[in-house]
Length: 287
Image 1 (cartoon, rainbow, N blue to C red):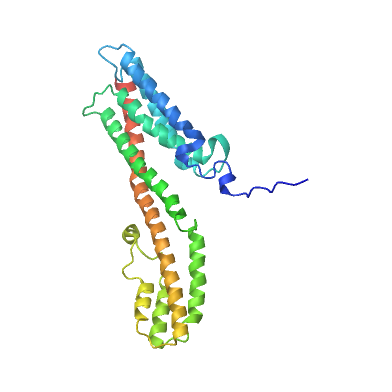
Image 2 (tube, helix red, strand yellow):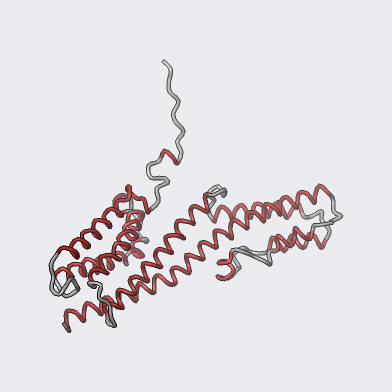
């Protein structure tokens, strides 16, 4: 009896292998966020309140309580990242909830104000919340770009894999450069000695290295009178080194963008929690 050959096991056959945190469980948290936002909007439009829906009514208190609980829960993502679990409350699920419920807060918190903003703690908390959400949207775009960049023509190499590849090239370069004249061999050694991680934040954000010693070594080999075979070998290795460095710089650029985002997003979140706590205290203790 003929047997069917087994289908190759690859990432395409693994459930959720390519599913981003935004699409988690077929947009489960997007749907939950939409339901909450629509319920808030329906209540704002159809629940009678005099002189209108705002934070001081029972409906306003309800929206305010829901919004405050969501903010407090979403702020725990940083702690959640330190716990490795799977399933319903995996990090992917938590991050998906963080994004979509955070966006739902735009509707919930804005309706909590009754569209009445002024110079008070409530407006300060609302403004900080909007800034946190906007910075979060920026973070989402960078997070989404990072895996896309890694998988676009780069063999999905991780940073450790790239570093190991660079070391392998350098080992070959050390042997290949020995037949070169002293000056040219020294340029190759300078290229090998230059660390791709020595650049500061500004350089990493730019993604460029105008003082790249590998490029300088390649330029220095132009017109060389060295042995053609040795010269071709060194040029080939330097070209591979240059290409790998460019990939590493692109990855470091995206990671630097994430660093800048965290420098803004986390302090804003702390300020939001402080303003929200002050707002709640002022409402319940000072009327």
